[in-house]
Length: 413
Image (cartoon, rainbow, N blue to C red):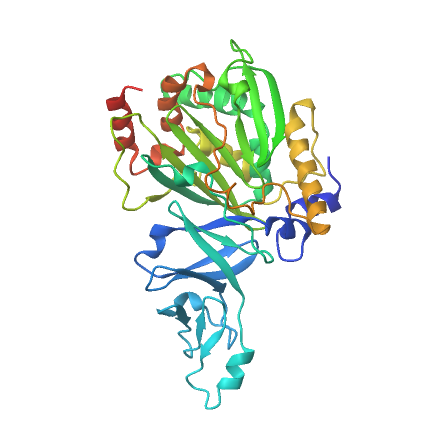
């Protein structure tokens, strides 16, 4: 159990807060590249800051404070000109560095323009996503994790906004035992009520769990009933990439679940998936990585509980906008949750001491491509489990799901 001071330290993400300062040492996705194809601007909110993302005519991107420093109108409705964005209200023009280059209605604007600057942040594209960095300079490198760079794969991006704090989502990733109960017993209960087919994998009992820190975060391991420490579930495991990302999947499928803190009580949840069937010759590159919505409430406003991600979201949301950790009762099975909290507090201390926290990358040689561990033969049944993973997860809503399933069938893997 945490006291109120620790609770606030771990959950508040705005500018100047301890956690906000830690989280600002990392890059976060703020949009899918395809979102700026039809309209060159998008209003975004990240770590409690309201911003406008824009794409210029040359395909480069800018990220500025949303409110124009003149009279506070939203730059999200401005027009994009060359490498700049022009406020719709009075025509003030700002470049990607936040400098004002034009004040059309001002007779003596030269000196005034020199004094006007709005907040500007770095933004870079990678693998169909646009990432932003809101921290101090010099900025670290945008991590080149493997899924963003792999060739010969199909990709899609699922998304939803969840009305709760980012930390209760990440703590779920440090809780292996919930899988057999929430996604095993409870999901079977939901399916039985609907007369649906029984599930084969998720309900396996956990005999042993383990956690190891590594360069980029924490490795989560498990031994399941009928298995041994030689199985992928223990020997390989899968990583929680510090501070806000989980890597999951099975044979031929890999997914980053990225938990982007919008503010203290909202999280943009992104599922970034790669599908890698073994076929003769590489798949042709996708023209655009599709973005799709993952629903978690039905037309009656009830939680959709017949798939894994919907179940997870129910547990996150029903804990409240910010879970009250001063009233919880932890047990020995919560060792992963305790580890994550300790690690976060430790990394806050490193930032206060002027050091880089865990996983920050500055060496270009290290950043060519960062291959992360992940089970392929998950549940000792990788290829068979893959269909259940796709049908029972966010991927069932993907616009390319049928194509993906057909490719795996063709590949017979």
